[in-house]
Length: 516
Image 1 (tube, rainbow, N blue to C red):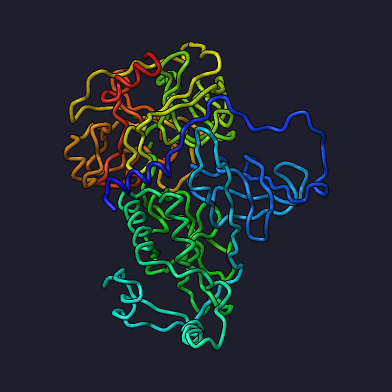
Image 2: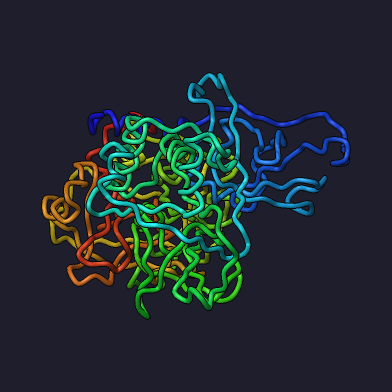
C-alpha cells in the first residue's frame, strides 16, 4: 500500500461533508413511556442527546452511520437506556467501538446504518500469569510483523488451551473464537495505523475497527488483583473514562504505549494511581501531546480584538473564530467537520467565556473541500450566520491578508484557551504576542509536516503559544488576519512552534467561496 493511497483512505474515512438542510426529527407524535418502547436508546454525544438508537443485543446498539461517522473517539458517546426523560434517569453505558456500513454514502445517505459496541471493562483490577515466547517463533506466527522492539507472551491457560485445541480435546475460550486474520490483513491495518501515528492523528474508524476486532488488547482469563501487589499500575483515563494501562517509572513519568496517547490533547487525560478499582481514588494530569493550540499571554478586552468569536458547541466554549463579514465567521475545518449547525452558537462582543455579548446561530457550515483530516492541510471553514451580525465598538469584521508576513514579524493570537498545559479554560479572554518563523525551518522541526498552506509562529525558548480551546482563532498583525490557529506539538513546548492555517495561500478559495 503506497503512502499516497493510505493517506487517501484515511482522509476519506476521517473527513465528512456538511449536511445542507436535511433534518431527522419525530414530528406530530405523542408522549410515550419507555415501557412501551423498551428498546429505545438515547445516544448522547459530549453529555447531550444527539441521536436515537435501538438495543439489538446485550452488546450492540444500532443507529445510523450519520450519527457515528466523523466522531473522533467512542469515548465521546454515552448510551442511555431505560428512561423516558432526555439526559436523565435509566442506565448509561460507555462505548468500546463504533462501526458503520463500508459503503455508506454521506451525500445520498444510502446504507445509513451503524452500530455501537458496548464497553465491558471490569471494575476490579485483574492480573494474569503469562509465558514469554521465543521472538523468532512469534515472528513466524505473525508472518514477519515482529521486530526487535517487541516481545511476545501468552497467558498460561490459553497456551495450554491452544495446544489442546489442536488435538480437538477442548473448545477455545468464547472470546477467542474469531477467525485468524491473514498476515496481509494485519499488515494493512498496521500500515494504516502507523501512518496515523506518524501524523499524530487518530486512526480512521475503518482501521481502528479492524485492529480492535482482530487484535484483542484485553487481559483474558486473569484473576482479581490488589493494587498493593502492583503499586506501579496506572489507569490512563481519557475524558473521565478508563482508556489504557500505564506504569509509574519515576515521580514525574508514567509509561504507556504510543497508540494510547498520540493524536489527542493532554488536558483530556487523567492518570489514576493507588487503587484496585476503575474510576476511584486519586488522579493526576499529564502535560504533553499534540494540541489545538493562548499561553504566556495577558487578559485583553474585547474592544482590543473586536473580531474575536467564541464558537460554542452544545452550550460550551469549543473553538475560536473571527468575524470576516456580517454573514460569515471563519474558523478551522477541524472545528466544524462532522456535526450539524444546530449544535453551534457563535458568541461575539464579550471578553467573558460563555457569557455576555450577543449570540448568533448558524444556518450553514462548510469547509475546504480538500481539507485533510490526517495532515491538517487546508484547515479552514466558515459558519454562515442566520441573519447578519450587528457591528459596534466591540463587534467588527477583520480584513484578511493578501501578502505573507516575513519571518521575524511580531503577531498576536487571542482566545479562551488553556493558560497552561492541562488547565481549564479561563473565564477572561487572553492574547499573546509571538513571532513568525521561517517556513523551511519550521518544516525541518516538524520533519516535513508543514505545507504552503501553513505558517508557523512561536519563540525559541517556548512559553508563548496557543493551546487547548484556541483552535480556530485569529493570528493577527496590524489589525489584519494572516492565520488561523490550527495545530502543534504541545503547549509551551520548544522547539515546536504553533502551526496556523495560511490565509494568503487560500485567499482565492476564500474569495470564491464567500466573496470576501
